[in-house]
Length: 381
Image (cartoon, rainbow, N blue to C red):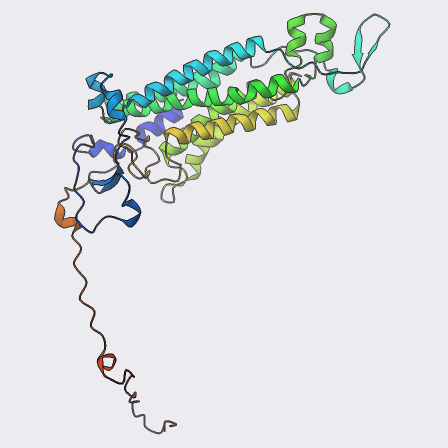
């Protein structure tokens, strides 16, 4: 945490020198003849050197039902409220689904020992039962709450140290992104986990114990839920740090940036996944499935709220309110732009086309070419 704090304090913020926050409220009229052909039938206008698409006309209907402070915000729009409401509904549905859906009961071959205990014919399910190295509570704290603490700490630095007006905007998108990753990941994990009914390596000991709940949990091996939580939370943190530190930009790429953004969080995620194998809770294929689902959910959720890591403005969140059609100025611009007037868009007319003299003649053929005279050389006629 100290190393990340040092990087945040030393990382120069591009908006700290802006004279005033950008609110996107100074429209420019497009001169005649300057509209791109592909924009002829779309609501496109030029705004402070940025080609912008007008917001959805239906947004005005939602604005009538919202507080006036929302309309004055440079980023908030009612669609974000719909996103949070949808995540809440899906979260409740996932809790009901994981509670009420019993795992699939696969058939298996077993032999009865002399003492009345059961034993599998397959040795891969006869490992002893052990306690969790990373319980589900610890995994949730490390993989979900720790990234949220990073987001909040960065927001405080933005707001009070760098005087960046996009601090709340950035914090909202980071929280929305990691919650979206959580819902997307478990929305894919629960049907697969309950439908496959894969045995855990310690299933035979759970079966001999006779506890019905433990037997049900013993059929929920693939994919690993702990690994899913670790990779979706820390994977989202890696994407977020990679954007803030501009790891994959050609002018900013450094090994230490990559180490802080990817190696450190991913090492912690892999460590949690390895303990699931050493604790006899999962096989290798189980943690690989959870890692793929977790990183996929983190990738989708991050790019729903932030530009790609190779974008010029990858450290700035997307701005849905004003409908930026490219990621260069996705939110508050990263540099102060000079004022632009109509003359800046003026393009001089090309000179009129004048055909060559021989094309205007009656013959329509080019005159013979007079070769230059070179001493000692005779041209062949």
